[in-house]
Length: 93
Image (cartoon, rainbow, N blue to C red; front, side):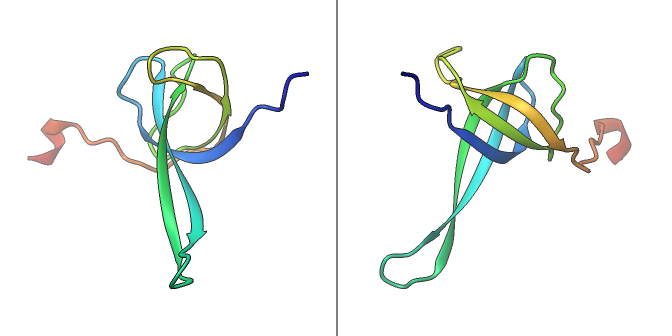
């Protein structure tokens, strides 16, 4: 019997690769000694079949079979579109 696939919610931090995005997933953890909540950030490479994801998008990723050396996740859906503005080098000067 197959188990359920893991899902994660995160923010796209890079979309420079073809059909691949890097998704940062934040999880709060309690420090064992000091009891302070600490953010833990893990980055996953996920397959984006149609190159739809942009920077700062909130996405849901799902575990899948190995697609390459590092890719074991795929983008299931884009939850919210990000507000990141892409600046071209000519516009800076």
